[in-house]
Image (cartoon, rainbow, N blue to C red; front, side, top):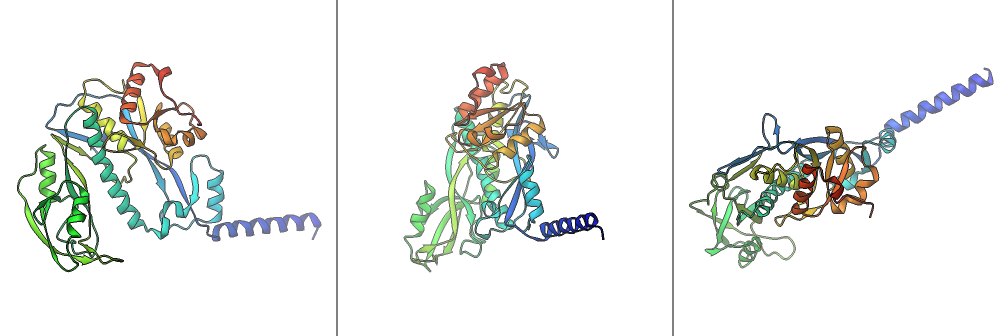
Length: 362
């Protein structure tokens, strides 16, 4: 066989071997890529994302899009070839699998956690929006989660409003644990609650829930010191003076809080916040209106620009990362609070973009 032919054959066989190795060698990485965006002022699956009842609303225009990130599943085994392709690509990111699914977290556990965070972000968005508008909000304590297999399973449910424990009124989530731990494991504790269904109906109607019922639960010993527990996590819930419902499925995590809050503010004020402009953004939000950082910021800016966004509301703590790869035609607007965001939207609507607080590398 001529030397040239032999060399070409050897190179071809080596390349084939490398490709096979790339396909069959598994690596501990996962992939993040831009996900869809949703206009909080518009519709999803044929119905309005933000639905407000019992209060006058105003016409809106433009976009206030929340952004998402797609990630590979916990069970997905990435091969070396896919990892190399992902590292070379500009519209996705390859990250250690442990970053997305720490301690062997399963898809089911991740979905549950994301759903809980999404629910909490909606609650905080409503509170922050109404506080921004000076509308009073009443706080209450409610069941956030019930531990599977715990004494409370089947007796208490997520969304149940806790009025009292053993007859003592509850004013804060910590009160619940303090009152339960007065007991010894094996003793009974009495909860006075408003069931979740009734509480939700009252909230949708913008009213305080009426009536209550008593639920008796036998405590169990906690792992470690054996103190009495019932197996719930209580959180602060709120009663709103009118109905606010957020309709969006197949989305999880806490990062849509800011955009939900701004959408609510826009619908409840005569002034058109966007002035018809296409604005997208991201960020967690707490009850006081403080905006927090999120993950996957570069994927979200890419997704926003692909959807048509001209401006992107960026949590201050994400700015340094976001500016490393800004899509052409997208302005990154730095925000720390919901008040920052509304003021920036006013500038955008008026075309006063030179005065916008933009992200920098520092």
